[in-house]
Length: 450
Ligand code: S3P
Image 1 (cartoon, rainbow, N blue to C red):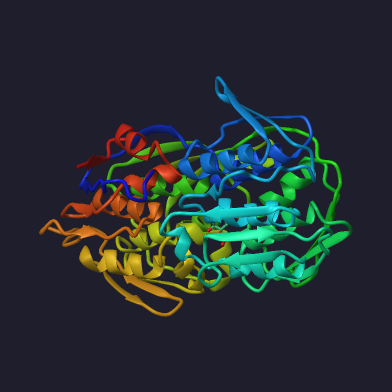
Image 2: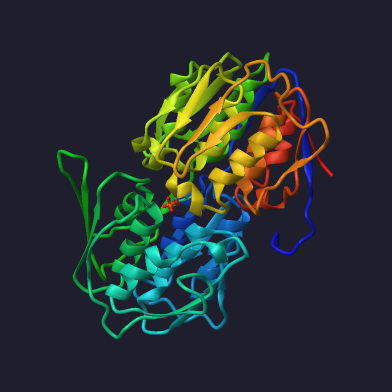
């Protein structure tokens, strides 16, 4: 949808005490991987809790186009895979819409096959750098044809026998790591990825779950060496997808900011590679209780009870960025209501997300009266705990640049600002969190779509 569809502005207004218990939809990263590995494995994979957002559904369609059989039965998604090494050439281009994860991981998965694969995306995705994945694929022997630089659309064609590589990640990116490992599934021999700093580890965990021969060695500086034996057998699994912490971040911060709030968010993934935001908010003095911590489907999961409280400015170290990379826009909103100044470092990757998030956040904050400064790879925000003067009384809207997280972050801002906060388009929210509007309203948030 979204690209080319009529923009749907939305507005959020000062709300009083959010309350209730909500369940967050499935984790986006795990959902993509569940469909990909399920679609590749031999036999049946049954998935519950799958995120039914557009990004993930596009990945499902791509897997179907390459031979997987996918159907929904009640609340369960049932995937019959092709068997490792047996994907089929898609007859039409694979369209990943807005999703970098779908596109980059699929480049690895399909790009090493000895057939043509064409990948396309929307305007946002077609601006994002793909060289970070195409470079290691080229080293494996994959031919790449792109119209413009290393951007979508691209056509990939693998060699008859792709070569295993030993690859040190030049950027801290789980997408790049995953693309190389997924390519390694169809390469004879051992593919090795060296990861200087840990990023989300769902691909490694799930590959092991599906029966891949994968080992991880971590040295004393934290550098990880991941080795995958290619062309092994993968077998269908039962997967329970936990709630997405990157989506939970929106009601969570809304509850911290709106006076009188007391909410519970159930079933949130607590994988340590994803909990940087919770740690940062706790450092800011947030009242977040982690309840009922348990193991579900091989991942840590908990319920979060969140109550309004005053936050204090924080300095977020650059090393924490991989564990909260998608949460900076909404953290910046929280910082706009904290006492004192917050500074966030190591944000260079924010410039190549669904939008240039560093600029989009700084522009949106300024438009809504918050004091902030944008550096090449950092952002500082000076907060106003009572929200006085925040928002835009003239009704000017934040430009969301086809970016779901910019849209949701600024709607959260409006719930605690003196004046309303408007956004130019809420369509993209459906890529990752289709229930956002209803879920927020069920807690008492005053949000309307135009
Ligand atoms: C993701 C990895 C991150 C993240 C994205 C999802 C994944 O991207 O921003 O939303 O599922 O692997 P990078 O790996 O490019 O940092």
